[in-house]
Length: 217
Ligand SMILES: *[C@@H]1O[C@H](CO)[C@@H](O)[C@H](O)[C@H]1NC(C)=O
Ligand SMILES: *[C@@H]1O[C@H](CO)[C@@H](O)[C@H](O)[C@H]1NC(C)=O
Image (cartoon, rainbow, N blue to C red; front, side, top):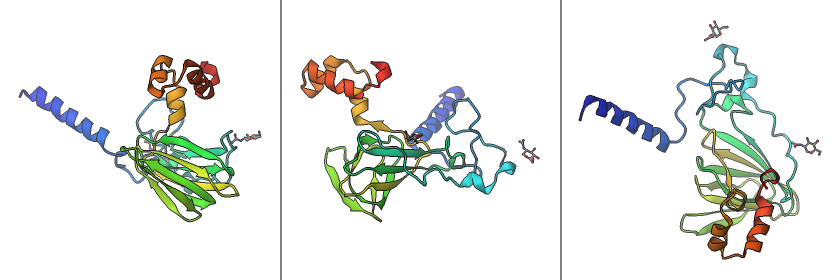
């Protein structure tokens, strides 16, 4: 093998490693994100560490719930763009609130495992493995469930008061794909969806109107 080929192979293998691994390890104590950049990078650039203060490591934005959606759900996802102190640390978190009967529709995070701690309430929680076996039960205040990376999971408030969940991810950018929107709200050809689900054009049309964002219709 020529030296050039060897170099290319090594670069390729290093690249594979980066893709297969979780977030890269930090190379400094911390790297408070400079969110004023408009460069698109894997990890945000740091601000000068001499300018860091304790407030760079404290986040106060999840003391209260957000507004509920029509399905009785609210989520505040906290990543380095809203909490710059998280940058390069390989984690992020979410505060989720569920109204009585509210649901967090089936979804998955392609880049992170999640642990979900029930702060208050009774929550039917579960995930589906790649053999389509469901692992679900009602968990209550103080209990934690783990949702393995990349697997579809869901939650529903089955108690008679609002529920609050604190979720933590082992990536600073876990990603989120909601199944209903990914299937019916993404513009996949209707004929394909009709065949996949065995539904009529009218039924597929109904589903799409529900999930396609208004501006794309
Ligand atoms: C960071 O800030 C310190 C103190 O103000 C300064 O001496 C240093 O040059 C700065 N580093 C960079 C890379 O700007
Ligand atoms: C929630 O709704 C209220 C009233 O409509 C609005 O003022 C507020 O900005 C909303 N909060 C969020 C986080 O969207």
